[in-house]
Amino acid sequence: MKAGGDARAVLSWSSGKDCAWALHVCRRDGLAEIGALMTTVNGTAERVAMHGTRRALLQAQAEALGLPLIEIALPWPCSNADYERIMGEACARLVADGFGTVVFGDLFLEDIRAYRETQLAGTGLAPFFPLFGSDTSALAREMISEGVEARVVTCDPARLDENFVGRLWDADFMADLPEGVDPCGENGEFHTFVTNGPGFAAPIPHRVGETILRDGFLYADLLAD
Image 1 (cartoon, rainbow, N blue to C red):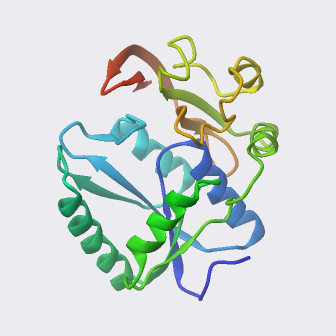
Image 2 (tube, rainbow, N blue to C red):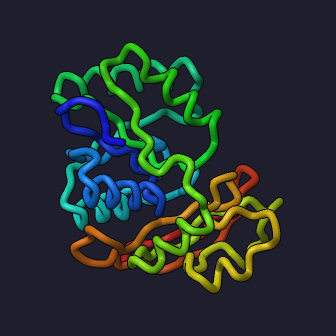
């Protein structure tokens, strides 16, 4: 299945492995012409929400991939009304700039897909989910075998303890996962920062800083190296 229409697509970019793989699949299989990355950033902390990625690292990813980065700054705290207004304005700008599709790296959560579809309805932008319905165990193995390198930057301590945060997302990491934890973290067990993979001109230099507990999640602070 391809993205609809001939208009360019923007990729919803979280800084993690799944959106990086969605980009690769779209390019490899000719599913969509990705013209830019789009990321929402906490305007106060200057980090990607949930992943905690610093803007300097986010921008380094875009540079390594050779794509423009569209940053959408959100206030903190951000009400639903503010979020929907800001995103509505962003969607209008995308349409004006010739984009017709938003690509998402979601894997199997139906409620998240339905929310994205609802949010884009009537905007002139069509959602596209090239990875949706994938077997995440097989997908994780494929990504790693094809050269995706990522570091685990956020963990839900109710599912994974502090020994998992800051680690490389690799075969050893998956072998250590407790039963019931999705190997791609699709249920929110963990989030990653992708440092290298198909399409990257070079790996993203970084080092792992301190681990902190914030808002109920463990974060490994990655620093540009």
